[in-house]
Length: 288
Image 1 (cartoon, rainbow, N blue to C red):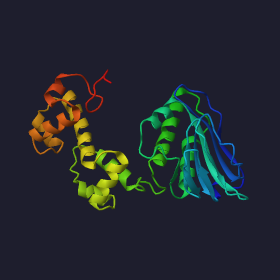
Image 2: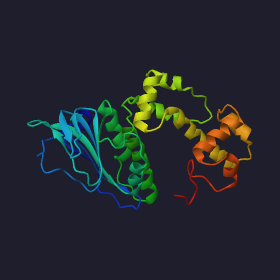
Image 3: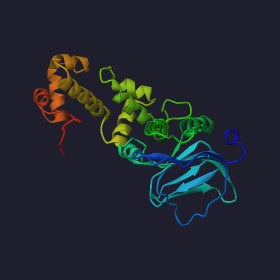
Image 4: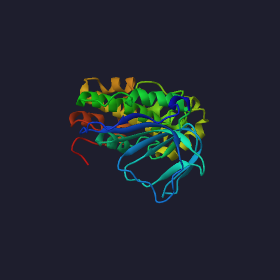
């Protein structure tokens, strides 16, 4: 692995503990030997591992198994039992980052699609090595602000890995995740579902079935949920009429807007506007 040279490179070893989190260790390791497969590994922090060369395997007590090679990334959560390593008699090269803190707890609790999967393929490792160097390759930050800035850089990288972005960028490796992102974008944009499916490289019925199975909601309803969230913001922060909001957000008319809003938010737009601030369809501050 050219980027790792022939010797272990320590990008980070130790950092000031901050209340919101920190990067504890970041290492480029060109020759990792096989590890005994038992007992299970378990660490007290999160870990991101990028396999840069060689072959190996991942497994855990939940029955998940994966063959590993260059361009595969492993994400391990605190306390989770697992094992990964190169094939018997071989070695591999890797980059690993160990990190911890509430900011990462919140990230993984957000339910990002793909976040539960421990292994994913992210493409050619060299661009990722450079991104890791750029995110955590500087001396440990010495102030809360610089520490937070570093964690935000690393969170963007972590989000790209978890979300299935490949080395070429764009996050198009998973067509359903690409579809979700398109449907969650600008709520004022016209997005015919057939065109979204085509953007994802799938026939519409295949896209609809897979989207519903993987995300638990049909793509049309998911898009309406995003539009209702946008409508909530407009109702509470502007004096726009219901007819104007309906037009901006692409509803057929005010009646259609009111009907879909009530179905998803649990009350008519007029009552919602007169009530408290929103935190999502059907929920208000202080609600369950």
